[in-house]
Image (cartoon, rainbow, N blue to C red; front, side):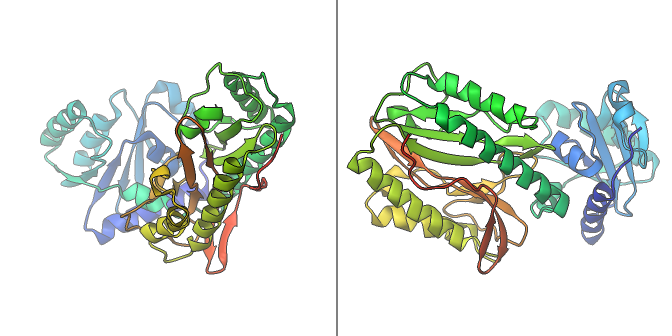
Length: 362
């Protein structure tokens, strides 16, 4: 058994409070990232039952018993969800919340059968744990800062090695290795290294194309530290930039500054997106900025809130998001500039990724 921190207890209590307020006696949490958030257990087979009074029961199998926290009742089971439905029924629960966005059709059939046997009703939780995860605590923010610092340092070491002839795939492998050598668990997602016309593909996968003189080189990557993901993008030029490359970089740079400035407590996600998007649109490149401005980050590389047109989420203090506008010219090249930032106060967010956003000429 592993000692659990006050951090996980406090998170479970926050969920319990939400359950009590909704007159929901208990919740079955089966999504692995949410189980980790509430218990600290990293597992491919675990679920946690949280009661409205703050108590909890964890189910996992023999492979993870030694890593389970020592302040939670433990059920040893292979089918963890079914086992906890049965436990909830034994404990007198008659209405059990479940994570409907996580459960498969087959899994739902199993839960319904277990619920019938346990004489209880299943109710949707509507992403209750994700709602709690939106605002990060101090320990989470420290992990994010560390992850961003690793990404900055890895990029600083990589850029002097970039030269014509190196392939996108070679550069990606080099970057990923540097991230690990700096103490991270690894990259937080598959690094995007896109040279020349490939830089116009927002999520290009590294290929064997060599970097050529005159290329824009887009590097979108992150580091994973304590399970937390950083995310940043910088676009550099290999050789003297052409006028069109300088132009679109300057526009994206201005748009990114506008997006960061708009990321304040109380701001609506749609409006943050619009602040950056209007800069790109006014410059005549509306159609060349096809994706949302950014997204939340944390235990997952893409979390709520989504900063995009039509999004109604409101930002709050201590919510980390990315701000990543781009312009993509098919067949020519593209620019994206991205930072991980934390919403702080009306005078602007805390920027966790520190590498200069200016157009670097290699």
